[in-house]
Every structure is written in structure tokens, then in C-alpha cells.
Length: 238
Image (cartoon, rainbow, N blue to C red):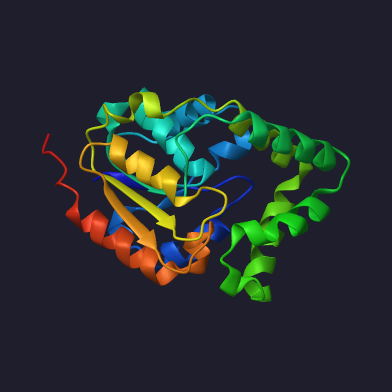
């Protein structure tokens, strides 16, 4: 039986997957990895994920987690049984966004992470959830808990991420691409590009949803993810 690995986004943890963990059947053996907390590059994160989990894997990555998942399938395509990519981006960093990240890194190093994150909070969620203090505070709590060091290291890993578009055309496992219709951090065009590059990829756009779709619209995400998991080809007999 292949194992389902959930890969969090930047400075995120299992809390962002709590609605999925509660809904996913136990036979999928869902596990939230923390390789992003222990490695300094996307390539190293993917390598560690593969080294720490034996056999065939189904990878479900959100945001930076999706970037790690795409790198893992590049490193070991024969081991990936399925790939679910949520609110992510296959492109390398642009000069403009790199400058924004580097400016944020300076603030993180100065101990001003809360200031930066609160100012950018509207970018993470759909406008209809901007006043949902329980939701937004949960997000702020786990990102701030990651600490300045992780915010710096993971942003640097994102800055130097590889161009996944170069290998997506060679992916042969089933691929699910999901994006919020109002995602301001990884807009729809990023997900549409991935789906166009991967042969036979399935694309789902979640209505009234921003970047944190596992938390914002868990009902749709769970239904979509479980239907896709059921559609995966059976594990080959050995």
C-alpha cells in the first residue's frame, strides 16, 4: 500500500492539514512531513522526503509543499503513484518577488515577523474570510510559531527553487491541480500552466477561495482529494 504524504506550505505545519487528516480514510496512511523545517533547499527537502519514506508514495503538497512534491517526482518518478498540487507554482522566482522576499527577510531577522505577516494577511485569504478571526489567527499562530529562523531559511529556499516546468511534461503519474479562484499568492494562471504541462492532469478551481484553501474550503478540498485518491490505479502486485 502506498503512503499519502502531506507537505505543508512555507512556515506551516500539520495544523493547515487538520481538516484533511480528520477526513482521510486511515488506509491511506496520511502523514504530514516536516522536511521543510530541516532542509535548506527545495532539492534537499525532496531528497529527504524520499529517503525517509519507503516504497510508492502519493504526494499532496500545498504552496511550497507543492514545489517540493514536483521536485520529488523529478528525482524519483518511478516512486510517485500520484501527485496532488494545491495552490502552487512551477515557475522559478521572478526578480520582483525575490526583492520583496529579501526585504521581508530583513524584517524577519530584525524580529518584526508579526508586523510583516499581519500586513500581508489579506493576501493569504479570500476577502470574505478576512474578518474570520479564528481562521486568520490560527494561520498567524502556526506561522509565527515557526520562528524567524525558519521564515528566513524557507524564503531563501523558495528564492532559489528550480524551474519545475522543465520536467512536468515527463510526469506520467496521475496529477490533481487545485487552486482557489481568488488566490493572490499563486494565481490561477500558475495552476492552469501546471495542468497544461502535465499530460492528463485534472484541474479544479475552488470558488470563493484564496491561497489557504485547505483551511478556507476544507469541504471542497476534502471531497476533491478523496475522489481523486479513489481514482488512482491500484497498486501493482509484487
